[in-house]
Image (cartoon, rainbow, N blue to C red; front, top):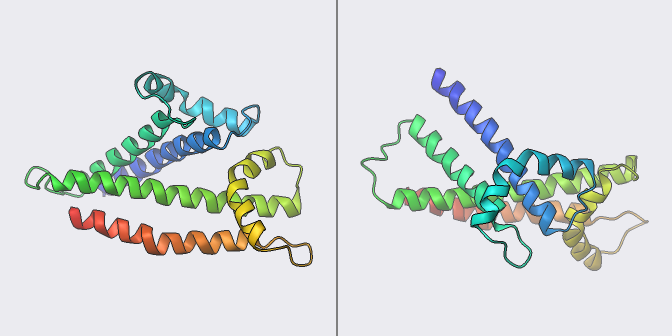
Length: 191
């Protein structure tokens, strides 16, 4: 019972921190303006770890690889802790287990990224109907713009209603069901 409570606390706290690191990575990658309160909050929450790692891990093509590495390391650490708490025999298992953990951590980050996209598009769609001048709207627009633009070129509005969020949801679900599920199964087989 204590084990389950500890697993719950670890999952909740570390997943929130991983989410914050991923959001910071995407906010910077999509060039979201940082004068927004949401962006400032994400920077304030993650600055304690991002500043030191940026000295060790340089960026590449404008991408903050240090922040992405932090998210992956935290995810791998969480998976290791959860498997260890559930009694997985790491001392007896071979080296393939660690490769499987590393791949599984990367797949979890990919899944979280897709869920971030789904959430951003959903909130943006709702806000566009309810309150299009919300201070969060520029952040959501900047994060979803590349995906929305692709589907808006393919599918014209019908009666002035943009159906691109619907197609983004469908594409995300298919992406989660096919390649991501296959990668997750592969990582679990390595363990």
